[in-house]
Length: 139
Image (cartoon, rainbow, N blue to C red):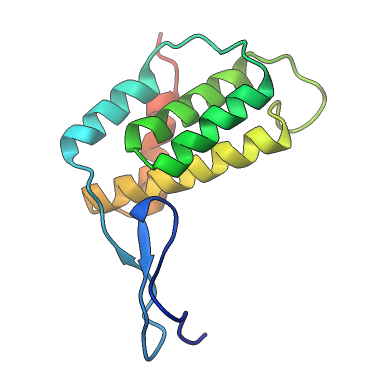
């Protein structure tokens, strides 16, 4: 794989691709701190009611949070999607979220995992497992 061309910023400054002479991969930058990760932990574990808003409003709100790229807002998208999945009645499909909701959930999770990995100096898979731990209901 060759150079990706002129510098381009992709969603939320999580990963920056820079012009290069050979394939060197992404350069990561983050404005998040360990204090932000503590707030992410609280957000993921918060007992939050599932929204009854129409799907279009939820999608618009979730897309805005994804585009904004704030770690807390990404955690809200993940928490709300996970809670929605757990509380919706099964319809015989693998996921109880619509394909659009599922795509937003997956993207938010990918971005937040990368952000946590960067801040804490761990692999994204470990950060993803940490997200799972925070989402697991206690009691």
